[in-house]
Image 1 (cartoon, rainbow, N blue to C red):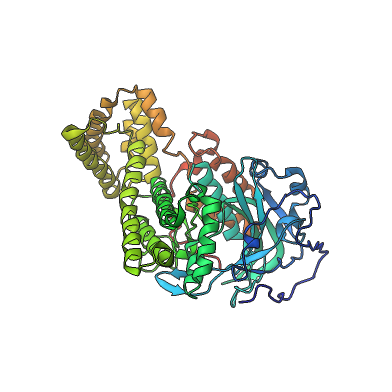
Image 2: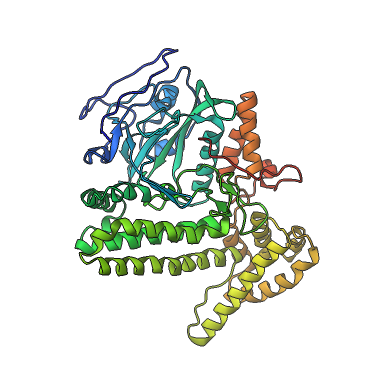
Length: 528
């Protein structure tokens, strides 16, 4: 791989403004770039500019996110079509496509890389946090293989809606800064309008980034990458000497355990948990065939390419551990000079992951059910812990047997925590309404032991049990309206509603409802 690649052929069918920026130039602009990844040695990326598009149009701009990042929101919005399409390069931008490898559905591919995404650069937020700004769907790169490097409008809108919903739900995630249409078609199973999403991330460094260099036996660059990740995401480890690499593995595992537990808490199914789709920052990344579960079933799969259920809802914790084991393999040369000792240290770290996941999940599900903590200690605490485990299992078994909607079941239970008159609304979600009473009686007996008032308990439960999630059938309806009729009103309404997922919003009540028979959308697609 060479650092500088030849440019793909461009389509120059409209007025295009290009501004080539020399490294180190300090001309003022609406984004103050500071590009640490582009300063890494040759081999980490290829320098390549976005391919201009014919007639870009700004679909939406995330002003609140721009302001949070300290960007000039007015200037970005005024020239958003040109900037967020890649037609105009801003001062200080150093566009690159990042190199990485990855296990895709368990099969290792030694070179993947950004095939349709270009990192424009990084910014430092007012709070000191560093963020990548990346165009996704911006044209061919040296990693495109036989792809066109473009994105269709549907996947762009899905990523925008779901990533912003995840942020509003309080789950670590990449964000969406803008979406534009390109005025050019893309060719998939049929001809579709092209689009580009501007993605913001703590970084785009993946497990697969480490695998890229491990596959080439390049331990020097693995060390450089690990030190870069520590400096960027885990600065507290910088003073740990050679132990910092083991502590890095442990820290990444801890963040993944917490992230996946929170995914499960809102019924989220990533869909493609390949190692190239796991960010070492602990953020949710790459919203392809993702979806939120309607009726509870741990076997739920939406992705059209997941034929075996590898990445089903209930498999996600174990896949997280599998992916972390692949990261550990790349770090072995850094963990200890003796191979056997390095393997033992890695196995210890990977083994701790599942225990940490269980702790994280226990906290998530307890909060969702309004269960008090087990703080007695000793035998009484153990007995209560066992009792609560049985209660949690009984609730999830009830949802599964009765084909109850996952999100609404927890939300209605939150209402029942405050007023027994709401029991009927919870029971109405069950195929057999009478199945609710035995569980509710047992649940109330346990929750009454925490000393909180009914109103306090209900408020705490509503704060973790969303009223709104991005329902798959609603997303598909918004995409269909935009693609077929150039009508973005449903997309805009969903974006507005999902910004307040924990609030009851009468004006958007329809978005809270699960699909009716015939409305179900049971498959999602990558869009590549």
